Amino acid sequence: MRALDIIEKKRDGFELSKEEIDFFIKGFTDGSIENYQASALTMAIYFRGMTDLESTYLTEAILNSGDQLDLSGISGIKVDKHSTGGVGDKTSLVVGPLVASLGIKFAKMSGRGLGHTGGTLDKLEAIEGYNISLSEEAFIKQVNEIGIALVGQTADLAPADKRLYALRDVTGTVESIPLIASSIMSKKLASGADAICLDVKVGSGAFMKNVADATKLATLMVSIGKNCGRDMTAILTNMDEPLGRAVGNSLEVIEAINTLNGRGPKDFTELCLEVAAHLVVAGKKAKTITSAKKLLNQQIKNGEGLKTLARLIAAQGGNADYIYNPDLFPKAKYVVDVKATASGFVNHIDALAIGHSAMLLGAGRSKLDDVIDHSVGIVLNKKVNDKVSKGDTLATIYANKEDVSNEASIIQNAYTYGNTKVASELILKIIK
Ligand code: URA
Image (cartoon, rainbow, N blue to C red; front, top):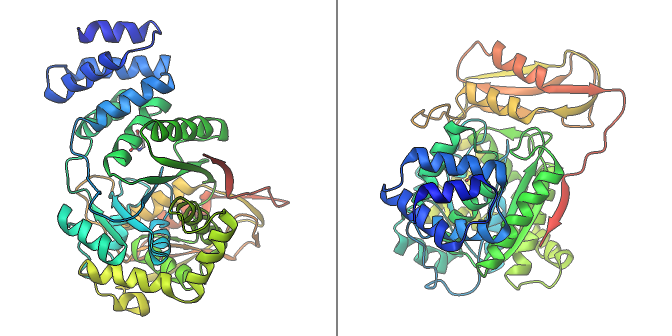
């Protein structure tokens, strides 16, 4: 077998076999296939696509390039969630504790943020002392004891994906549905959960700009997961505005705490309940989504969800007092209101622009080694379909620098107004 033949076969639109895909990914991983050949293959895949079966083989080949977590030491059904990335997305901080409080094992490895999307690990590190590095043994022990662990990647999961993604990033081949699906699913499958709920974002602030493409991606990921024996659900959700109101690490953790206290923003609460409900059904603690949501609402009312978050923080070395007293989070030095420059109903808020503005404040990274300022960020006062008069406060900036005029004007320009409200649904589709 030769890499060149495989590249030409895909270039000419033919279906690759499992052996060919395995050969290519193995060679790419051990260095016998060159980066330029892998770049050519990804470009051929970008234009020619892949069948579901080819995508499954590619996922498995990437999965087999590294370690896989063995969660068999954890009793019961293990669940996990994944979001394709959105601005203000702190869902894991609410979903994890809620489902764990119902006795379902939530064993999650998360990532850091780059660019406009913040990572769950960065948010957790806003809490003094929180340790994201657990050994595999400690990770399993903690999930058995308190039902939840939220850590950084320990093992070398899907190393071929890391290298392939770096090539895709500089060769214009990120936006390919089979490549995105196999990249995400190889890492999710390597993390070892039995049931996975995928939150596939749709809209201007997401990879997938329309429902048709997001449906294709979600359907493919569900199919790959099922082919690999996992219980899968994908939820398509709207990213035509940031999720919730808070963007920035401490601010987002505080919003997650408020949500577990029953005082979260409407859209964010709705999403958390939907994702968690699918995991509760997959975890066999409820038969229907409606009864699962009832259980979850109880766990909010009786404080068990919040207690589980506090237990998680304490178990990983963090100061759990932050959960009951959010005043402990370090404060930004400057608090600046951003005023509306026009009037009307908010029709759209460019989530990417809000994420970019938060990054410029120091809440995110533009380079991998940038240091994050956990105290800064943005809280949106006006959301889609709110009525705004010129001069109203659109958002509040929390900053550690005095001049935030650039960030403020980015926020002002992110808002689009109309004379009427727009149709705006958060949950667009569920694919099982
Ligand atoms: N996220 C991933 O992990 N991989 C992709 O290819 C795109 C988004």
